[in-house]
Length: 104
Image 1: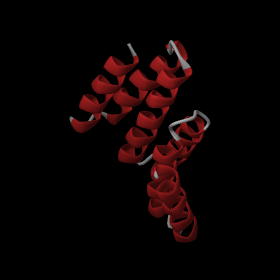
Image 2 (image 1 turned 60 degrees about the vertical axis):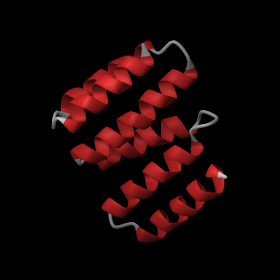
Image 3 (image 1 turned 180 degrees about the vertical axis):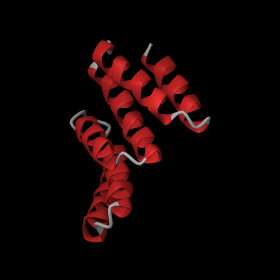
């Protein structure tokens, strides 16, 4: 269920329909069968929000994903993109270091 929602949302976002992709993911997070599924959808929601220009929504989604073990590096990398888009370059560098450290 979660993997199908993620795949569908990614396809929608790549086709240019980021608002619909966000809706698909937000609904899926509420119905997630496990914390890992919810975290995967939250991390993907963060990516979709960055694509749509909703950087504060992305920040929230990556923050939620980061709370689940195994998603810390992906969330930190996503936060680095958010910080870069918002011109927070010091925070971007810190998030990149965090992502690199956690990915090892």
